[in-house]
Image (cartoon, rainbow, N blue to C red; front, top):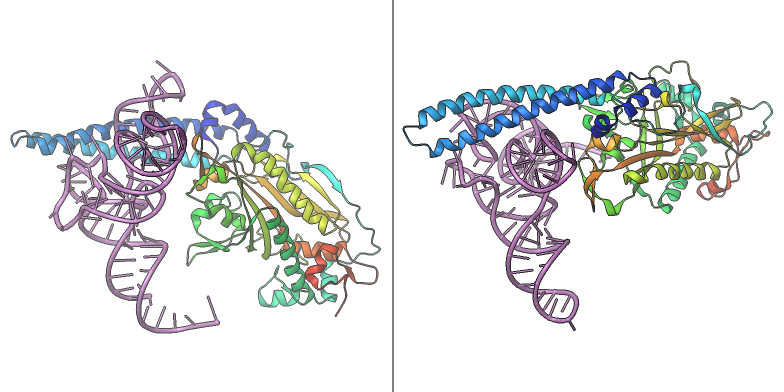
Amino acid sequence: MIDLKLVRDDPERVRASQRLRGADDSLVDALLAADEARRAAISTADTLRGEQKAISKSVSTASPDERPAVLARAKAMAEEVKAAEVAQGIAEAALREAHLAIANVVEDGVPPGGEDDFVTLELVGTPPTVDAPREHTEIGATLKAIDTERGAKVSGARFYFLTGIGAQLELALVNLAMEQASGAGFIPVIAPALVKPEIMEGTGFLGAHSSEVYRLAEDDLYLVGTSEVALAGYHSGEILDAAALPLRYAGFSSCFRREAGSYGKDTKGIIRVHWFDKVEMFSYVAVEDAFDEHRRLLAWEREFLDKLELAYRVIDVAAGDLGSSASRKFDIEAWFPSQGAYRELTSTSNCTTFQSRRLNIRARGAGGVGPVATLNGTLCAVARTIACLLDHHQQPDGSVYVPAALRPWLGGREVLTAP
RNA sequence: GGAGGCUUCGCCUAGUCUGGUCUAUGGCGCCGCACUGCUAAUGCGGUUUGGGUCUCAAGCCCAUCCCGGGUUCGAAUCCCGGAGCCUCCGCCA
């Protein structure tokens, strides 16, 4: 949720952000009204409670003669307080609803528009020229690395088995990613893939995109779509030591996505699947450091893709395509020769204080207790990265080139060939 | 899954049986001041977190004893529901 103080002090800034997102800017005024109503209700209830307290106290000290009258007054007071508290509860719930309805305030410089209005910040590397490129599904089948048919048999559409060199590739990528992350000061974490409703809600995934999320009704738990959820929840309700910031975690977990509404997109292969494993970077930083940390996360993502020797472009995602928690988002899209297109491999978002407010995460520093910022970035979404590697590094003879950085994790192999 | 115990303002802890100056005790830690050549020790004071009011200062007020309900004029304390932790039993990779 956004900073209420900002809404009070500079509502026009928030309205402008809403417009840039293509969202309703009148929600801001609804929020201001709800805020005012809440404060009025609290004032009323607080005053009544104070009076009731005083009367209650006088009951025990009242003389036997006075007592019945005092008690009668106290009883009447209790009724009034009860009514005022109900009104306060309603006003607070209304405020919360209005508060949650507004997405994070976008950062200055975010391109306006929707999905197609991103700005390309940089092109890196040279896309390989491949004659009659084969798709990763075909290559994966030849190498006996990816088995989507049996994935479908066992689990349904958009599931797969990684086998043989495919399974080894996953482990190699995860090892490479974790090695880089811990070298950069991230704390490696194996995170749970099932989380409670309040954690899922707090990270902002139950809003507009709730249909993307798997829910286990029997146990009232959610399957995470990214370990960002568990890593954000990790410090929920805590007051962190400001001197210990930045706190950086590299989380490995399975990720689950319903992919509702993506029917017909990427139906083949393992680019868009219901389940995949991922190494995610997550940072808790001082508010004023969030902007720089976002660039650092992007740099670490680039470093990883550079190690994989991929050609890619960095894009600045337009306001209308940002998630509700993000104030800015950079995606990296790598080149897929078989598709003749750049496809998303990583994504990094600056959530500023939006997530931490919802999850009640703060930091104590010299100036007292205050908000912290959270940011996240993909280091390696494994399935999609494997798809890209096979496609991008395919050779005319049907083999696949292995980037040097991965070789130590693959027994020194320089090429992948059919077994 | 069954039985029992526990959860107090950073940590430990008193208070819960028997509801009312609990405006929550004490210790540790931390901060400030005093004393001391410096440190230590000692003494004194401070030290939960939200919210409301406000000249967005101080002050005052409200809430907060795991969470949510209830009883009551009044709940840390009584009742109901839930969560987490521990012990034992059962089951299990």
